Amino acid sequence: MDFIELDPEDFRTYALKSPYKSFYQTPEIANLRESNGWVPYYFGVRENGHLKAAIMLTARPAFLGKSIFYSPGGPLIDFEDTTTLDFLVRHLKRYIKSHNGYVLHIEPYYELIERDRDGEVVEGGFDHRSAVQNLTHLGFQKLSHADAPQYEFVLDINGRTPDELLASFKRNTRNHIRKAEKQGVVIRELGKSELPRFKKITESTSARRHFDDKPLSYYEKMYDLFHSRGEVQFIIAEVTPSTPDARDSSSSQDGASTTSPADQSSTSTASSTDQSSTSATPVKSQPTIDLSAAMFMTYGDEVIYLFSGSDERYMREYNAQYLIQWHMIKYAAEHGFKHYNFYGINGLPDPASPDYGIYDFKKGFGGHVVELIGAYELPTSPVFYHLHKFLKKLKSK
Image (tube, rainbow, N blue to C red; front, top):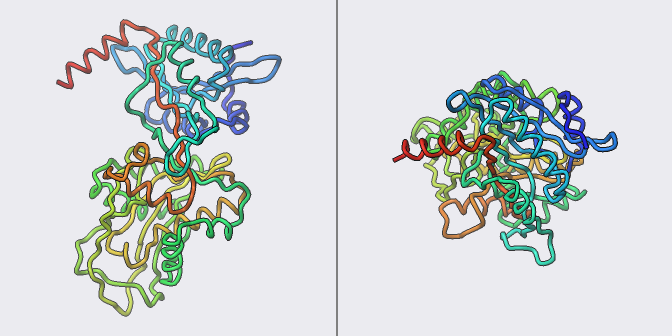
């Protein structure tokens, strides 16, 4: 086997064919991180002229001039192939150490154990817990926190038609979808110049729900990087002036916010089942009302529901967040995607959890819980690594 440096396009070609692919492991995300001071690297393991594994890394100085190396969504490898894994890690460790790095941080998109829609282990299903053992054997340490969620909720399309998928939803979910359609809610894609409308909704939602929103520049950059490739969509639900059911909510507080369990971000899966809204008064005419908005990645063989927000004043009236999901599920089915990924849930389903509403909302569309193996760190310069951890612990006291 050979450890080789890859051209970004060669890496892209391999990544799109990998069963472990993630939009985080793309040259576009490397470009995004590069604009924030990270340096990208691409490596692969080649055997008999064919790639067996690949990884996109980014690095930047983090501690006493030493650099952290980070692979979001990677590496792209079978973690139960111990020969290839050992070879890759050994060469990565050597390379990172020689380039002034003190730690390698990875967050693979690799499933741990098969679970059903209730989060229960599927009897006779796959079990990849040996992957964790292999990483631990190589010196990786499991992290308690990660940028990406460890638990997701995924609807398998499996060639089903939109009608077949709709029939599989819970009755209450179907009713919300039909109500939104009857109310005249319009779903459409936003252009780049309209992204401030998207940002207004997510910003006020994050303020109410106490999670960090991305800056407008992030959404614009993601649009620039992925939209021309057909790999990102910003979707809005609105009520047009000609819709007779459009409402005025001047009696409620200004600004868009939400208590919808549908609203989420990649760094927060906060949720609430309180969907209260103020009373509405009919008006004759007014500008288009933005009800809800969401950002979706359409990469590889899955559609990923990444960020969203809603205006709470119209939650009960229109249920627009349900119609957005239905619009994109239909898109996934009609364009041959295999999976519709609702993205993060905060741990395994627990009715006592304050975040249970997110899971319950997603469960209404069918699907199952996906448990990933999580995030890990490998010290490549143990002295600097442990010194950094010690100083961070002192600072937190």
